[in-house]
Image (cartoon, rainbow, N blue to C red; front, side):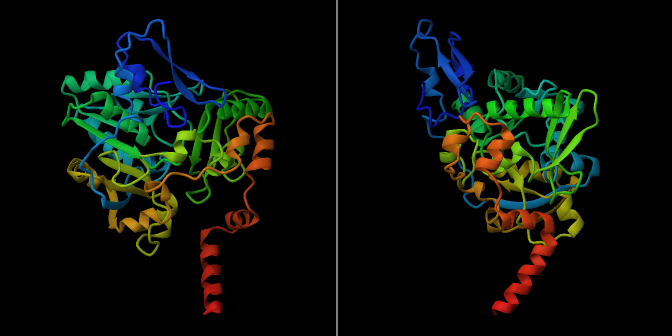
Length: 390
């Protein structure tokens, strides 16, 4: 291994930087991708270690208290397709209009999840929505450098460890035409567990799954569903709280080990801009309709991030908010997820995903009741109980 396995993020920088191509990326028994070195081909140049984000500290001048924005896209079609408020789409569209390229994650019809390059709006649309499984980066860092050296504007969006990978691959070279967005990440899910889930859905519905939308807004933002698309039958919508994969993901049970000690889940953030879900925005500041349609939190971490936000803010409904309002309900902005005891067992258990959900990740009764009642009823009940206490 290039670095200790428990801190390897699978970013793929080592694969991209190796001059003799002696590194391959392969999945381990838990379903996470790692570099494998062919020692016979290796020339001991040490470039893999010199460029590894896990072995080298990044330094930047990003703000410890970034400007914090709550926003949602004015385009209703984009808003519906986005996981939260469609902030990424607004920035990405602006880059394409300036003849730049967008580098982000897609899921193809074979349910392969990987980073690729969008040069038009049709390709960009494939990047909308959260994936919740680690994307393979393949040789994307090499391609990014080619575009940058041609003078093209490049927008890269990914998990913070992948953004760190971009910077360590480019090393000390500073590109004014590069802008990075790091996503507020809980952790990346196991590909093995995801594939197991898909196989079970194929068998259950007697058709092949060709698309997954993990945070579909058919029932609004509060009641997200997992939308499964099939070859022939109509789509199936599963409430997130009942979906076996999403339940295990949201209970933090199926993440890569390095995610539980993520060194990028902190302030200052690693990207020029940070984007996530603004669950905790003051509900008195926006309408109920806008809240349920989805609101993004956007952190402007440096002057470049602020500049690009200024370019696109006319396409958004937005308001500046206190940083603490964002971190209070989205703790992964400032700290990594805590590893539950179930993580040690679930990925090596032979049961079905549904059985594993019920065995290791069943939601507490309180959470299930709250999901049925909905936000507004829960908030009203809390107010009533607080009056009784006082």
